[in-house]
Image 1: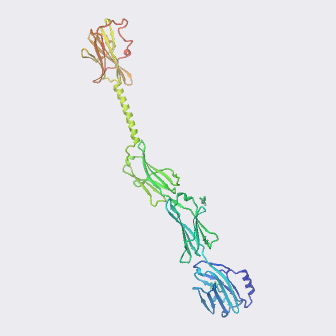
Image 2 (image 1 turned 90 degrees about the horizontal axis):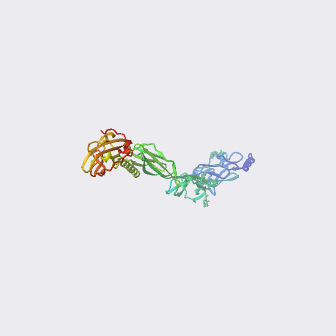
Image 3 (image 1 turned 45 degrees about the vertical axis):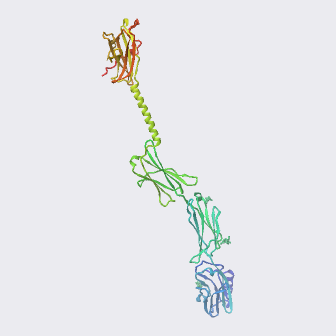
Length: 501
Ligand SMILES: *[C@@H]1O[C@H](CO)[C@@H](O)[C@H](O)[C@H]1NC(C)=O
Ligand SMILES: *[C@@H]1O[C@H](CO)[C@@H](O)[C@H](O)[C@H]1NC(C)=O
Ligand SMILES: *[C@@H]1O[C@H](CO)[C@@H](O)[C@H](O)[C@H]1NC(C)=O
């Protein structure tokens, strides 16, 4: 151990050199510091200005008033393990070896040298001390749970230590002087606990554990921040089903912190390409996100198990929730839409049917008497609509209760009076859009009494619509200018239709 010599002592040493009988003793500068448990050589050197006469030499080490070691012809020791070196004494080295120093070794030592007739002594202070080492643990805490942060102060001596907890420079715990526990090396350890129920907002705070100890000029501040963990909650949402039948499985992950998270959809354990919303920050500082998987062929996946899996630092094992996909029965919206479509279809069908069958109109029977003396009466009946070639207009005499026939397609010339009792001629005229006009003309000998005729529209074999007329028996004089009503009648321009098959 290097020994410092005070400048004054050095001067004395220089002055004494060569002067026989002058005794000079030197010790290191006070205080000497030693860690508990270490071996210490407490220096003390002397000079007698020549060879040391061992018979005239007495060396005494004392701590306070108690003797520690002595040499006077023989060596005596009063502290276990203390020793002086005989060889050292012969050359002026009276350093005291103290193995494994402890708290009881601290104090003011006196090194006294007697080299008859001279005697000299020097004092040196020994301090046994060790500065503390500070560490903080338990800073990973769970939001909303009772948590304990530990400040460990180790390897210090002497045993008194003060610990204070600070948050953003405000005292939140202590100062306390915890009970220190001695270790096998003679050094002390102590701990202080900070109890808290953290919230996510505590992650931003700057904490520290402040330790005061006699060996420290300024207290040690061990800074730390809390890592607050908040466990994610997993909720499976109702799958989204579009009208096109596309199904989107969805899970909601919420309440987690920190924001790093892995959310994955699995199909029977195999990872799927997953879509994720960007995380949303909630008011309490936690995060939430929605993860979706689009099922392109829902029916073929009917028997598969789909799971939403979450991995997060707050979870020891991944969180998983399984959805067994069932082919959706129609949702309410879907039912409504289908109902609406069916209704529209029904309406369209009804309209089509009405257009097909009922939109056939049959005209009133027009009467024209022609030929002089009104001997011949012509009755005209028309039907218009989506007629088929099998549809017909049939004349009937109500007096005779007899059908007069549907008539044959014919030319206008066929209207010329015939000797028979009656004669029927029919035309078809195509009007476009599948519509036809059927015109039928009944020519009869004007009866003597009044007589009724009917014109019936026949759809296939069924009578659909009927119109009838009664003509007076006595024929009035015919209009002199025209015997044939071609000018007034709408069917006048009609050209004959094709022959019904
Ligand atoms: C004095 O003696 C001790 C042994 O007792 C030795 O370790 C030390 O080095 C010596 N000092 C000097 C300066 O020779
Ligand atoms: C905590 O310390 C950091 C850097 O040392 C600083 O930026 C931050 O503002 C501090 N937080 C508070 C709440 O004081
Ligand atoms: C610890 O605190 C007490 C009381 O506040 C004080 O008397 C003592 O000196 C402190 N100890 C240290 C090592 O700072």
